[in-house]
Amino acid sequence: MKRTSRHSVNNLAVERRRFLGAALAACAISPLRSWSMQLAPNMSESLTKEQRDSMTPLQVIDELKKGNERFRAGKMAPRDYLAEKRSSAAGQYPAAIILGCVDSRVPAEIIFDAGIGDTFVGRVAGNVVNDDQVGSMEFACAVSGSKLVLVLGHTACGAIKGAIDDVELGNLTGLLARIKPAISRTKFEGEKSSKNPAYVDAVARTNVKLAVENIRRRSPILEDLEKKGSIQITGAMYNVANGVVDFVS
Figure 1 (spheres, one colour):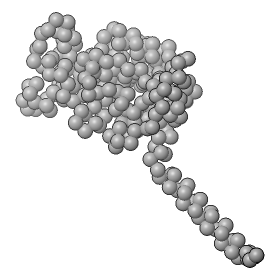
Figure 2 (figure 1 turned 90 degrees about the horizontal axis):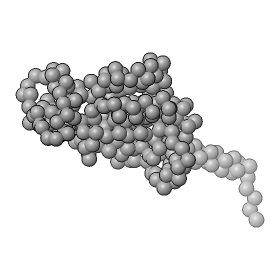
Figure 3 (figure 1 turned 180 degrees about the horizontal axis):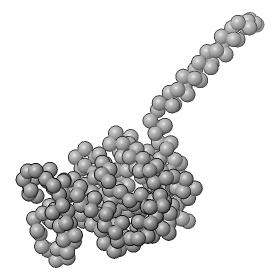
Figure 4 (figure 1 turned 180 degrees about the vertical axis):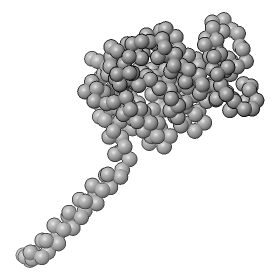
């Protein structure tokens, strides 16, 4: 039997270390690294109270931004929704509450690549603010412990177009009236028409900003939590064409 020299053994050890180092380096630059910092790092479980409570409002925003980047890149996290369902059955600890529009192209959980138990989501045409929505936000933040209130508007919004055109239709008339202040508050050079996409989007952005102000004004509870740094109230616009979420306030 041929004996291995000490020099050969040393060479094998060096090569083994090089191989392991290269493997670890490859893991470090793998897309899986970005998934490790999601709202719920373990894809077989929903967000836990400890994970949620350890995050600041700015960290929650950062995770939503990362989720949107994964969505746009087509590299969404591999999730086990049934496992998330089971893990959240006994309790939920969402990091944010999102007020979005009913538009079928703007499902908040998908565009932020969030899982079951990660976010509260309320939807109404034009993402308008009313007492029920604000009450839900107070529950989410003051009772459940969410760190972020996000008003999510979007481009090409039909409710915004309806408000611009003074549409009247049953209960929709009253809803669109809540958007009208955004029309008068929007500074825009060009054709102010629902047929002008740039103008529609400008009004939608103003509508988001006014909604954020409206939430603070209507809820001393949320305003106080924000002043203490426990939560943040902000807005964002989603572009239905390119999938980008742009935080606007």
